[in-house]
Image 1 (cartoon, helix red, strand yellow):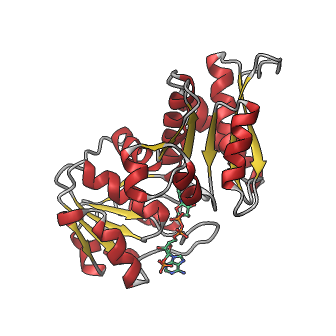
Image 2 (cartoon, helix red, strand yellow):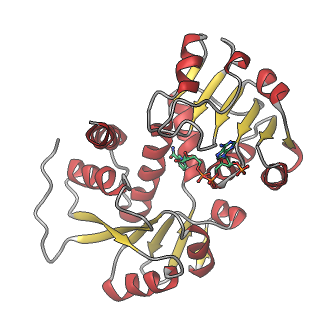
Length: 281
Ligand code: NAP
């Protein structure tokens, strides 16, 4: 792995804020990419207690911090407190990225959906006109639904434990969004697990007998990297897209927004895999 540059008075600083934040992969991913690009930038994790997102933005201004990655539970509060929002953040009411602009205004972005689309692109998948089944209706699901609708997906069925949340998520996709059930999973071209089921467990988010070789199966869960759903999809001969691709690409978009330089996603993915392996071991 590339040796990090020494920190000096000229080093530009970005942060990740969350609570809890100590398990965030963002510092490992971003600092690896800064080092690989030879950029004199550094990411630091800041534990920000719930309710303190506006104070964190004031601190960002005071310290001249160039950008923030934002994780739970601050994404909605940050979206409400920044000066401008990109279209995805405005539609979702959440922001996972803040950029300090040259005029001192703070711009909020949501990079998760675009990161997911980039992970599909890596697998050679274009969502235009596809029939999609999204399992889950939380924040990650809504980012994915919004980006798929903007990319021309043909039909997006939301399959979720809580029907009321499914309806709210489906509305994000306009005419192509519907509340679905297991028949939509079987009929889909693309099946996406956006629930937290499978994170740290062997549980699967749907009946695995529904998965067939023509499916493209994406899992947003990346710990473990090969979830029970993805293992079953691979065994069935389906195309498989793991959750680390989305994590890495949404981080790459963040870094481009902060620095103006596209980072090396391979260095980012290697850092994420190294960090996850260290945690598993
Ligand atoms: P969230 O807002 O808490 O939503 C969780 C979703 O999972 C909801 O739809 C919830 O259903 C469903 N769910 C949870 N436990 C369930 C159970 N036992 N049975 C049925 N449904 C269940 O979480 P999130 O922020 O959307 O994150 C979801 C997952 O995506 C997490 O594993 C997270 O790590 C992952 N993620 C990955 C990336 C990436 O870059 N790869 C980015 C963001 C998130 P209800 O609505 O009925 O509660």
